[in-house]
Length: 253
Image (cartoon, rainbow, N blue to C red):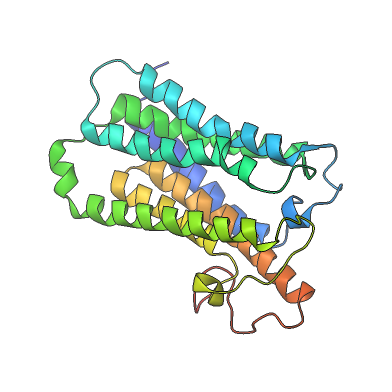
């Protein structure tokens, strides 16, 4: 089925609008996985394999549309695809096996909702990059590309090193939580989520299209309330938790 740019953009305006509406609601709903796990959302499955399944949708979906599209693709489109693939190959097939979550569970409803979210975001971005992109090599000298790629790489590094720190923080005991300290953890509770938000804002600036913007907005809509839930949990769990530390944006929230 052929989709015009007008049709795609119309859908994206609605999709972005939904994200904006959902942001305040999510501050009152804590998704029950990870440290917040409970059985209120019904049947559960392996956290590790649930993570693999729901994240793999992003790389598989975008790859099918991008690689399956006819015609020659611009160099920039390949760069954008490569950055997306770099993030999601790691998040899908490496990160879940680095975390100490072998015996932990995740509600199937969470996995299903994440699949839905990832199908739409991978589908819209994959379709745009595969069928609609018109980038030229001059785009690499555009300020939007330069700012975007710097934000993307910086965010990816922040995300990776923060996650790596948290993985090793518990000294091999996945059921013991400690107060993270040092680096950005001195200023915010969730540098890993802050880094991921920075990544996809950078991607949106670098690509400068509505599907990429939609993904960035939804990343904010999902991760900012999640960070707030983590922050409240830290403050409730540890009486000596740093009072000046914010949730996700240094000095702000």
